[in-house]
Amino acid sequence: MGSAEERVVAVIMVGGPTKGTRFRPLSLNIAKPLFPLAGQPMVHHPISACKRIPNLAQIYLIGFYEEREFALYVSSISNELKVPVRYLREDKPHGSAGGLYNFRDLIMEDSPSHIFLLNCDVCCSFPLPEMLEAHRRYGGMGTLLIIKVSVESASQFGELIADPSTKELMHYTEKPETFVSDLINCGVYIFTPDIFGAIRNVSSQRKDRANLKRVSSFEALQPATRTLPTDFVRLDQDILSPLAGKKQLYTYETMDFWEQIKTPGMSLKCSVHPTAKIGPNVSISANARVGAGARLMNCIILDDVEIKENAVVTHSIIGWKSSIGKWSRAQGGGDYNAKLGITILGEAVTVEDEVVVINSIVLPNKTMNISVQEEIIL
Image (cartoon, rainbow, N blue to C red; front, side, top):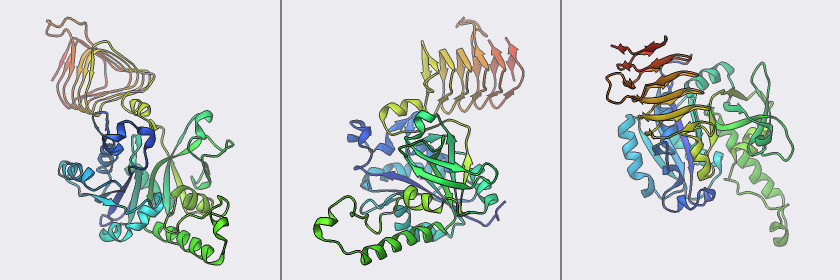
């Protein structure tokens, strides 16, 4: 465990108007990070997840949208979470690592021992405290969140090979043409401040090569000889790939839901799993999450509810911040005039896995670990 005095900052990369073109026409009216996802702006979800990081000092949003597009939201979310959130506007795209380096002095103002880096178009459970603990155990410069996906979809992402024992990142390649691994990069990282030295080295080496290599104007226009600007540094190709296998980067695998939101269609997956069946007569409120194989009928799901895999909810009202476990049921008989004709769960009720709650009322903050029928749980 780290010292109580250690401070952590989080950086969320939000891109800019030249990015996210696959999100059009929706992104023509609103910045993609502010598009509502499960009832909240897309960027709200990683910001809320950062709130759970121990000793969090500051959250930075880095992008090249106009500041006015984020001003109202940043002020609102800072007040809501009681954590300073600041938007930093790039003058031009610097790449995923270059953008971080561009604001290194501001990021290091609080002298953080660790820096989280997240992409705002990632939808997952964000196990950030667990990543921090693992990262401290590994003792490296950085740790990547990874997940296992189907062989067919792996090539859409950065594929990697990790040591099964030490969890060290051994090989990394971004969107390979041939299959490498079914483990992919989730776009969530934690680094020590040493990351800035690694980024600076890339810029310096690129500058040295540019000074050594003199080409004609015609050659400079050809793809084979065209070079990236010295201050444009990509995290994947320029940092992860070269440092893999050098005992500096490690991995933390998540078994939970993960999705990258590149298109409007993908945003549908992040509230309701594509294998879940919804309806008729279902109302789902902000921040609710519905897992694979779940079945919802004639019910109201309030804010921040989680319906886990293969759960069933019928003729029920599920209160704020409640959770229905895997293979569990919350169901009513459908007699809306009877006192116990439906099931009602108050706020923050947890129904554990494989528990059935039928025609019952459960008061707030209860944990249901046994099945009940026609009862009022006080």
